[in-house]
Length: 282
Image (tube, rainbow, N blue to C red):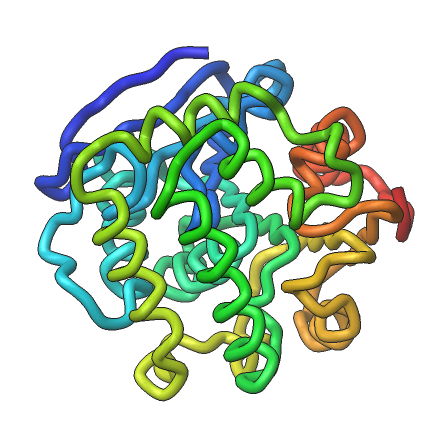
């Protein structure tokens, strides 16, 4: 696995990359960074060219022109610029949590290029507005508990709250978060993004829940059955409405299937992108 910082759309962008073959873009959620994929990149790179950037105004990527309000259009534009920077033609996108919404929006922006979608436990993608208001408030409170007073213990507690088994929290992710939160401006950036997302009315133009029938790409959805932020029943409904979708539910799993059950997870995108049949649970 390698890391680079290069300009994409005029924005300094940090990303992990490894492997050769069909390109696969990994998109993290709003409260974490590309480090959330540390247990997936090398495994997936055995079959794919894997790219995992820090989103705009996240981690070690610049904020560009984003100064507040809904972050979705700014982040999708940056992801499109990142794909252009890499020279990607057709590629697959895997998005976790808020990254799932961004993955779907990126597909709707460039359906001829985003050929396949993998969506992981994304409440911002399928939850109702009432559920979103609650889960985003919970997410903000959990995140700020670590960012406002970063320590090994506070960062670990934050992650333990959203996994089924606390022992599955990778130490390297805690170290990465603790290092990042020591940088100036991290609290301001987090609050800027979260306040933009919590403005439910302003975010309505970027909802995908009413446009699921427009998703033309074959879609794999992976949900944690016990996820407190992404309602499994909404994913079940969405799997019926998306024309070519498959839902796989992980038992004993909450919000981060790719972290909590990394070995099981890593096998699924590989099989899905190769067109193999998948079971309903894992």
